[in-house]
Image 1 (cartoon, rainbow, N blue to C red):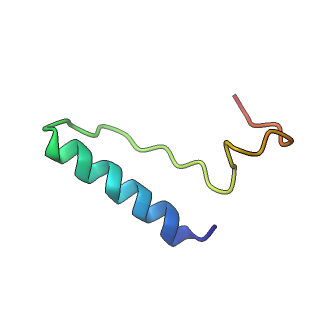
Image 2: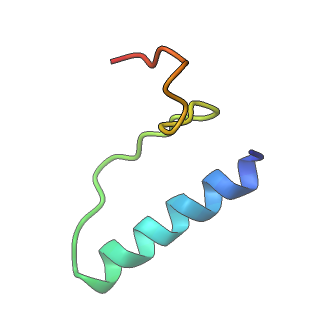
Length: 44
């Protein structure tokens, strides 16, 4: 996955928050760690 996909996801989340009048106070980016890959140990 490239950085553009991550940036697009961040923008989508920020747009949704703006639509719902929510304030985004912090953004956390977890690059290159898939939630669907059960064989990899993810940091807690």
